[in-house]
Image (tube, rainbow, N blue to C red):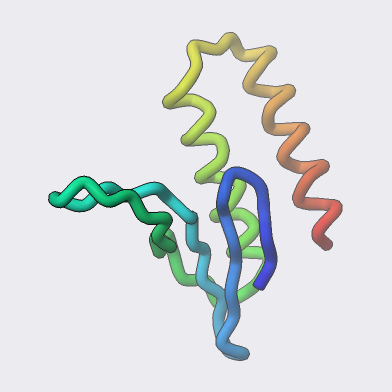
Length: 86
């Protein structure tokens, strides 16, 4: 398993890769649990990392109002983070 930022992980069964995110889920009875939510399947690690990058950018855009300069900086930061995993 490859642990990434913001609760994301990539797992492999030896043939493919799956991107997951750990999320907090509250049940009807009020109990709170951390669950592993499946995000996407990939045939290569490079593709799984691209999927992770897309999810991180979507998270960022949904949580903040940004100008183009900030978006470019965020993309550059993600590229550096992913390069560290290669």
